[in-house]
Amino acid sequence: MSNEKGSAFEVAVSFLIGAATGFVLGVLLAPASGKETRKKIQDEVGKTGEKAKEGFEKVAKEAEKGIRVVKEKTQEGLDAIKEFIDKKKEEFIKRTPESLPDEGRKG
Image (cartoon, rainbow, N blue to C red):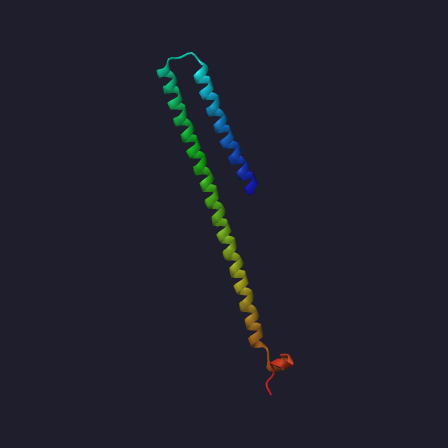
């Protein structure tokens, strides 16, 4: 599952880099004044930055969900272990001295 998320993130970053590179090359090679070209680049950089921020926020939210799931599963495991230990402890206490191995008997 983490490979899929990592892969999706890598694809998104690659797409953003490719789109930005294509745009910059297109603007630089298209006939326009320097002022117009700088304005286009500035606008596109702003858009790309916003897309990158949104992508990062999405990945961060997914990571938070994953951390929450791991914490819940860990707590479930700890609860199951505690329950098992408590059960075995009760079973041990209920044993009579006669049912214990020779080493456990007094006398």
